[in-house]
Length: 398
Image (tube, rainbow, N blue to C red; front, side, top):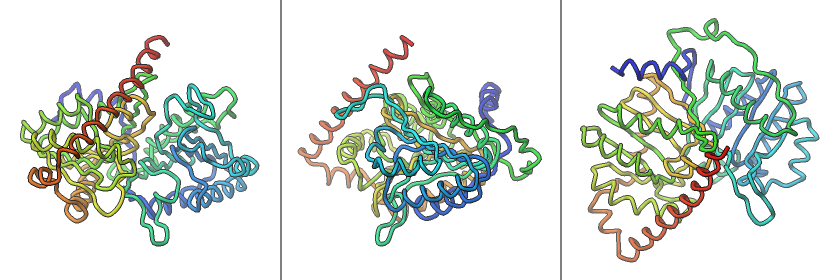
């Protein structure tokens, strides 16, 4: 049983009346997204890291335009770095259709550089009642296109109090620009009269934003390691845990907790994969079971603790997510949902992954490869340090 102090802390940020559904990336995600947009009556918030002008992005844009024609207020906020290649004509068509569009502004930006926090979370909220939260961007590679299956990723669909709170968060994030159109206030909704207590589950919203002194998602992973009794299953792209989480993983294994980590076999960022493989020696030495996903790029960010609770969202287990990006995860405490999610992750590990044993790693590891992994790891550490040092200094002076 969790301690009284921990239960009190949980009540501070968990909402009780929610229904949730795990959504796999690709067609299931975009079908769900289009259904939400088509059903919206009052407001739609879409905030994402990457929004493309390809077929997937164009289809979502047309759905949003159709919503505006029905009288729905649409607020679309995309990251100023990752979505900077959006054509001016595409943006103009959104604005002319009545969509409230803007970029999340960095600290400094010119034609040659971009410096500042990145809006890395991916959230859609409709009518303050329904939400999609995960790691899935709006562009073709996250969708199932002819002859090209989507990258592996996940989201969770929520109906309930957490969606209302996400509406408020989206309003605040949107409203940071003085020039932004004021969003429509989120309504007061009593979900106790809508969602039955028997089917409801607890959902907690967790954010990371170093400038605003939020490290809630990082703390979630620490809490998982500290509270786990039997098993932790982690599916994570760009898996480079910092010292604090590495220490907690090590201590969890020493207590007898089975830790399984599913990482990318094929990565869209080779440098990150090289750096990640440098940590394999440490992971294997500390008896952490390691799997590499093979079919295509792995982009998901999900973890399950004891088949009791789940965290899912945009947070990668590395220092960029911890210190340099605005991240959003949902913590879901529901045994049935956790058991289902664990089953999905364990099925992926069994059917679609190579188990990275010490023997296999030693066979693959050469002097040249280990040196390349070390250089990649040190390079990324230095970049992280310089980047986060700036933000630590800035946060102390604000």
